Length: 362
Image (cartoon, rainbow, N blue to C red; front, side):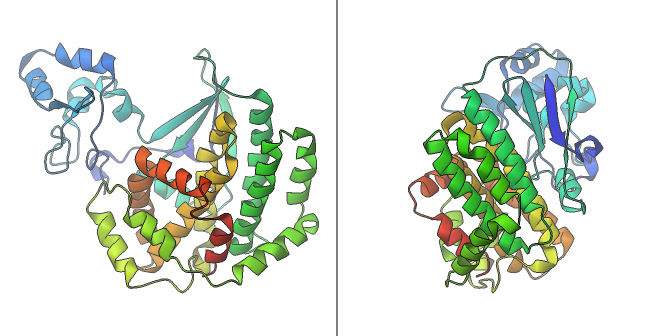
């Protein structure tokens, strides 16, 4: 298959025992059937230890139970007993792949390195140049067919390129770029709803040229002048499923320390990189159901929320942002329940795209 990935992906290295926030805590790992069968046959005392660490949920899925929030097979030095005993090939699929997430679209597989991983977050947020994407072949056969509308998928591939280029246009402020991104998504959604793909080239050309999208830029700037507060976003985050104890405490600190500006301009490069990261991961999900606007709204919501929570911190350093982005990703990106809640709110217009534009410069 053809693999597409961000240009920094090949530099990823697991920090293992040196990781400041191990992936072996805060969530239960469901085992794939092949790995479970291997674990059931492991001989000796180590096999007994592995099997003693397993439990089942109400749906019948088998997973490693948590002990004080950690996988019971995690050693005090931060290393995994399974990997030490059996090698990387002895890990279950989830543990072996993390923080790599793949999405398949026909004969193409796209790789994202989740920023819940400190090493992946560091690669992204310390990447000063605009992120590019590279491709290579992995030699694997196409695994199957996706439920894709080919015309819609190809349109969204081109549209995502335009969206990312727009966000990476550093001649504009980050406020302007995110405002234009939302307006672009609104126009693109109308095109998708009408299956008017003949108008796509004109739309892409308009948002690829600053001279041709000045009216849209003026519209976004007018919306930003409206008074808006971060509180609606905070309420959504507060009512989500919480996977860690740290995140509710973070929300409590932000509640009494509302940001004067959601996006600190001193970190414009980081807001750009985060937006590109989210667009890369979620934009093409609309190729299945055609619901593009809610995906883009979620991307902007993520960036605004991370920025607002960051602004409420006592220490606003690059390292503090890296840690916060990882915690946010763990809470929101790794919870299907939280992801679906956001999409539902946007599709019901509980939060509108106009509100998101206005809160950019709240």
